[in-house]
Image 1 (tube, one colour):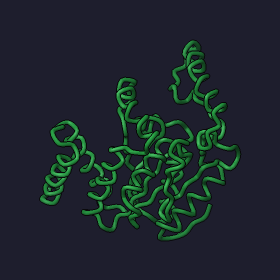
Image 2: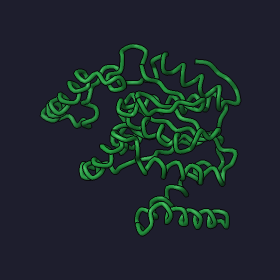
Image 3: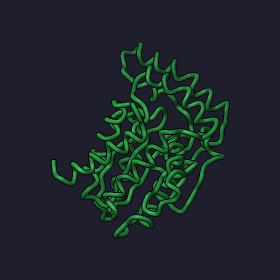
Image 4: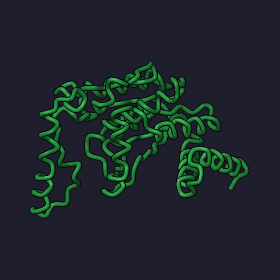
Length: 265
């Protein structure tokens, strides 16, 4: 380990102890994440941090197809704009029903009040990365509940100029508290169908979520292994990169704020 990395790890442990006093396992997790992010970003122009929708537990390989299309589209746009980039994920929970249930009270409080300690932790972590990589630009990318989380992080960062956020289909409970700055791109529609999750069309949203278990059982009986999230079909709450309304806004945001050279749609 280099002397520089050794110093960073030591400082990361000091920070982790401040964030989670007495919680050694959580402290180690924070330190490992900070070192992973630093190593990924140290020779790059842009660090993209993706926050998945839902519980925030889906690895890239498990994202639903439209979420993955956005990730891939952003990556290709950064490359086309002449930028060196790397992409990491910020997972908010582990991918298990037990962990989801364990976080349920916290998420209900978050939906009702907008207060989530985890968002403040992420903001502090990003500030830590910026301390050692001063020329790095950071882009938060999130969909649905991930978009709400990223907006909460941006509020904690108090409009720092070199950290940006692309937020798609924010969960309705957080819409009244959302803060939009010049560093934030919000997309609340796919340009084709109004999003019931953003605008709280209760009937459409409830229908999609209530029928999802039956779709999952149908696939199961047919011998097909399909993730439960793929069975939640909410018309309007899908932000595919193929949709010009979405793609054009994201490309323009990247070219305006990050790009070295301009491309086109």
